[in-house]
Amino acid sequence: MLDYPGQADRAVQLERSALFVPASRWPMIEKAARSPADAVIIDLEDAVAPSEKEQARANLVRALRDLDFGPRLRIYRMNSLDTPFAYRDLTEVVEVVGDRVDLILVPKVNSPDDLRFVARLLDQIELGRSQTRPIGLEAQIETANAFLYAREIAAATPRLEALIYGPGDYAAALRAPLASIGERDAHDELYPGHRWHAIMHTIVAAARANGLRCLDGPFAGLRAPEELERASRTARAMGFDGKQCIHPAQIAIVNRVFSPPPKEVAWAEAVMRAYAQAVAQGRGAFNLDGKMIDGANIRMAQIIVEQQRKIQARGE
Image 1: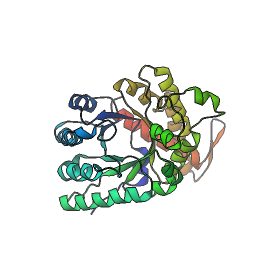
Image 2 (image 1 turned 45 degrees about the horizontal axis):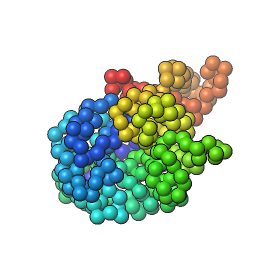
Image 3 (image 1 turned 120 degrees about the vertical axis):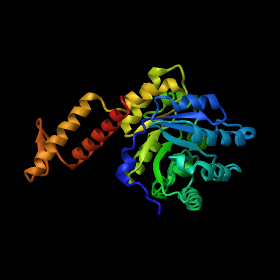
Image 4 (image 1 turned 180 degrees about the vertical axis):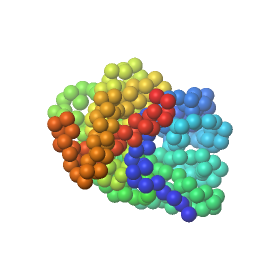
C-alpha cells in the first residue's frame, strides 16, 4: 500500500537550492553529493549527449547505490516523453534503485496526462518491487501547453510535489528572444514590466492551490553573483521556495536568499507564541505589536518556523 505524503509535508520540504549535475560526469556527481545544496538533480536529459545516455543511466544507478547524499534530496531528471530514452530512464533505474530515489523531475510536461503516464508506470514498478514508499515527481513547466494547463498539471497525481519553472525552453517555445537563461538582457529593458511574470506567477499560484512546492529555474551567468542574487530575490518575492543551480558556487547565494532572515523568524515565533495564548483564551484574531494577526498571518508564521527548524536541523 503506497503512502503518499500529505500536502502540508510537501509544501514545507526544504528545497531552497537544487544543484544540477550531468549524469555522464562521475566526478561531478561525487562532488554534488557533498555539496551544501538541499537537493541534487542528476541529469539524464539536456546535459547528456545521445551517445552517452546508457552510460549516464549506469552512473546514476551507481551513484544512488553507492554514494551517501546525507540530508540532500536525491532527484534525477529523466528525458522527456517524446524521446526514445524516457521509458528506459524509468524502468532501468527504478527497478534497480527505486528505494533510493526521492523524486523524479519530468521535463517538458505538456499536460496532466504526461504525469499520469509516469505515475502509472511507477505504480507498476513499485508494486513489482514491493516498494511501499512512493517516488515523488516534480514537473518542469517550460512549454506553451504547460503554461495553459498549469492548473490541471498541478492536480494530476498525488505523487507530484513541486512545479519547476524552465525559463530557457519556455522562451524557445514562445519564440521570445533570450540571450542568456535567467539573466536580464536588452529585451527585458524594453518590456514595461517583468517579461516572465505571467508564467512565474501562474506556477506559484498553481503550486499553492495544490499544496506543492515551486522552484525558479537556473541562472546561466557563472560570473554574475549580483545578478544571481537579484533574480533569486525576485523569485522569492513572487513566492518561490527555491531556485535551481548549475554550479556549486551559486548555492550559497541561493540558500541565503531563500532562507527566512532573522527578523522574519523572530516575527514568526512571536506570532506563534501569541497565537497559543489567544487559543488558550478562546480568541481567534489578535493584536501583536499594534497589528492585527489573523489566519493568513498564522499560516505564514507556521511555514517560516517549520522551514527554520529544518534549516537548523541541517546544522546551518
